[in-house]
Picture 1: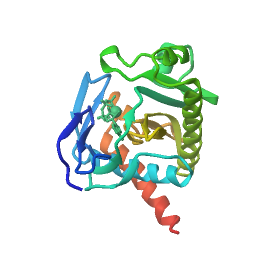
Picture 2: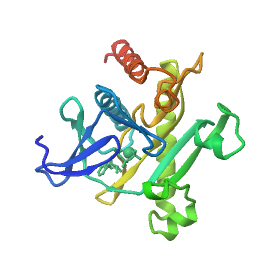
Picture 3: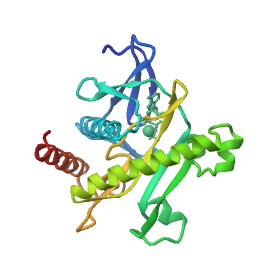
Picture 4: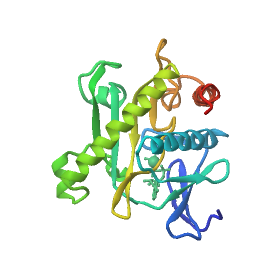
Length: 241
Ligand SMILES: Nc1ncnc2c1ncn2[C@@H]1O[C@H](COP(=O)(O)OP(=O)(O)OP(=O)(O)O)[C@@H](O)[C@H]1O
Ligand SMILES: [Mg+2]
């Protein structure tokens, strides 16, 4: 699918129009940022790893009845997706306390959160993606109470599917961030599911295999991301249908 004009350049992806007005191409770049863009780098090959992992999870979720924007892979660093009217919220699913949750509230790092927490942030870089509560979501007309209930339920189901899968790989899904959008009046999962948008810890050692490796200079990001891809590839080889 030929890419047309660049519609949006985010911090890690570029979104292009195509000759089909209902489809976009999302190019996963090698750029990596942390702390709301304060720390920035570029790691050759990162985009390829993240687009592959995202495509893998979108397909897995579709098989489990979750509608997503994923249509097919484009070239090695891009995917063709349905054009969504994005909902300006980030849904964060948390199975263990880590990151900003521990900074803001008196949780212990790694504390089990059972039932898992679903937290919503208002997606707006200039305002620093502030936490948002249900009443503000309704007052801004972002979602109706019924829609919010539906998206929370989808997020919980996605969490269950991803948690169970990573468990089989020996990894703990600590938390993840997802975004949704509207497609012909229906709410579907958009954006990405990658090592940039999840926290993954080794179940035994607690070692990080996600963007925290970059955020806190814990080691080589590309080998951490590569290890997740290797584990997924290993699982695929053992589960050929
Ligand atoms: N199917 C889709 N249709 C339309 N827009 C989409 C779709 N999927 C994702 N997007 C949007 O495309 C953009 C992708 O950009 P990217 O993730 O690089 O940066 P960002 O979201 O602006 O910043 P960050 O992810 O660092 O907070 C986001 O604004 C996202 O909401
Ligand atoms: Mg983003």
